[in-house]
Length: 236
Ligand code: BT5
Picture 1 (spheres, rainbow, N blue to C red):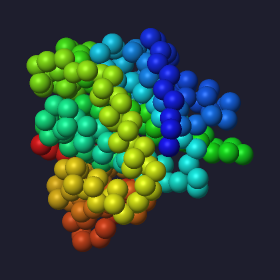
Picture 2: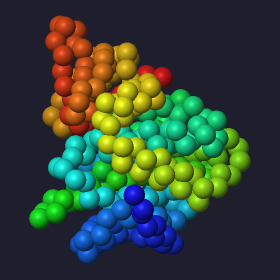
Picture 3: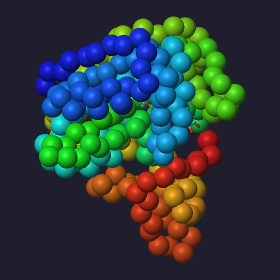
Picture 4: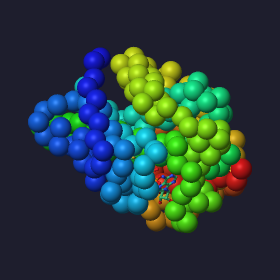
């Protein structure tokens, strides 16, 4: 599927710009910004988006009211694959939306839906590439490719490879295969984790994901809990 890329020096958020394009009925658009002044994560959290990172959003018009989390999975796989190909770094996926290296967050993904007469999805990918340092609130939890590799990475190439991987998997639309590949890159499984959801924290062993990408936890009492959204703490 052909796509069109728009590159900006600075935006509030590439998500907002992608949503503007959706109002014009457009899709298969990629919005990239060098800097975001109001980058956001899930649950209205702040996303630090200084120069040196890859900040981009992919605007899609999914055929069916598709499982949004599935798009997050495709993005995470694409990022992990391309990081490995371009840098050799063994980045792993943490459920639901992080790509990390040794527990330090390299990339976060935010998939938002726009529901109306026609539905759109905006898949936001934030990847730390050439930053040398981070603000104090994330300096112990974030990493960039440059900090790990000790050299600059070509962001334009990186973006192109990730977008190509993304569309390749998206167009194939093979859920089973995506879940299989995702599990290969995910290192949350088999670990004792705490899942922090809106109203409670649940501890258990991560044993898999189900068809709608929810995390399955085996609890001490043997029961299986299904976590639809939230954060997961894992010890590395
Ligand atoms: C995410 O949220 O990880 C989704 C981030 C999506 C960012 C992209 S950039 C392009 C597009 N435009 C946007 O405005 N957003 C998307 P969440 O799982 O809620 O994680 C947010 C948390 O990650 C914050 O509360 C911080 O602790 C941490 N964080 C913030 N900025 C970071 C960074 N640059 N690197 C690593 N961690 C960061």
